[in-house]
Image 1 (cartoon, one colour):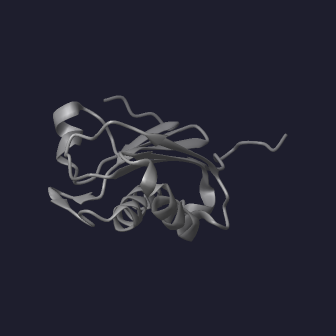
Image 2: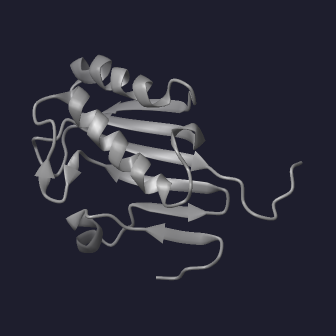
Length: 138
């Protein structure tokens, strides 16, 4: 794994990171990308059967990855929410608003056929913007 001053990676307790070779979040230049985040703590699923609770837990976990870079919800410029059912959009959207109402990132909802664990109803991704030291405003 190559680390440079402009690229930094953060890992979490996800067992899939090691298995599949990815990081929870990668900062590259002025962007921080948070990988797809499901409502797991280790191997324990939170909010089983409840899309709102799953979304809240997943957003909390994804935002925790941003904290390693000194960022929070106000730094988020893009969110993606992957759902297994269209009828869960309202509940996942409600959770999204609770976290990002002030920041108002660009947001996308995508309905997918399923996840690696069939109990998962939602997975989220975040992209954040950060000022890079030495960068000049244009």
